[in-house]
Length: 95
Image (tube, rainbow, N blue to C red; front, side, top):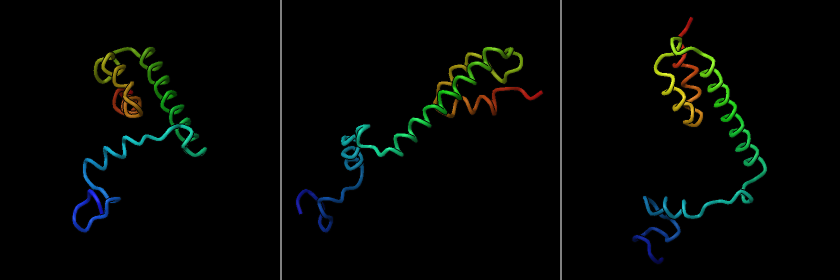
């Protein structure tokens, strides 16, 4: 055993150093399985669709029918899936 603690094999690491080492070994697109690649593309398509629909709705909706400033909701829509979903759940006033 080299570089490890007493009783811990060198291949078993824990803590921040292990996380940093794992992050340094990034996987390339070609290393991913076909299913994983399809899931990433599908998630990206869903995210872009949600963004487009939310921004289009914000563009057409008057500011008086929103909960909060329009500029805030536009900015929040660019936060992954959370932004557009939050806009649809919390940003529009119920009629």
